[in-house]
Image 1 (cartoon, rainbow, N blue to C red):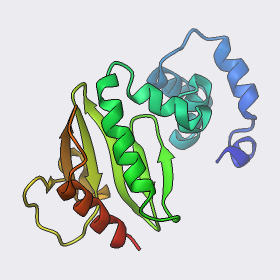
Image 2 (image 1 turned 45 degrees about the vertical axis):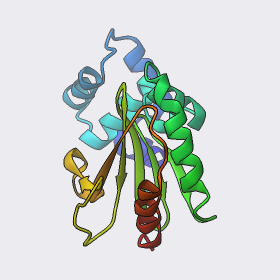
Image 3 (image 1 turned 30 degrees about the vertical axis):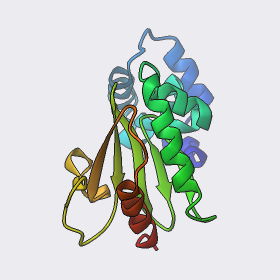
Length: 176
């Protein structure tokens, strides 16, 4: 979308930034509405411009910064995250790690796991295993919808046990 922004909106990103700098808008929704209403820009391009202007898109942040931001105020969860991350990365050289603003996705051909600090004391490990009924620590995906099929709640100070590893490995193996 960035490559075609001038063709679709009539201006390059830096031109839109200059326009937005002249306003006192600093909230995503307000910028989005302003661009759509005043300049008749589609939702998709207005959203892109707003994200880039506020530097709130994943591409405007480095991977380490994204993870640090996720765990700000939730530092006691970092050892749990680091254990999960190390275990998932060692599953295969084809694991792609994609930090985002609120979570880290793990992708093979498709996303098979997501690690999200859900509260100050809990990480949600969300995995995709089609056809698997929830059992034990493996719950329905809850608020994560169809993107993943199951959730495992992991509390601060918890160890990465064999049951968690078993479910992650199954998600990895079936993600081809």
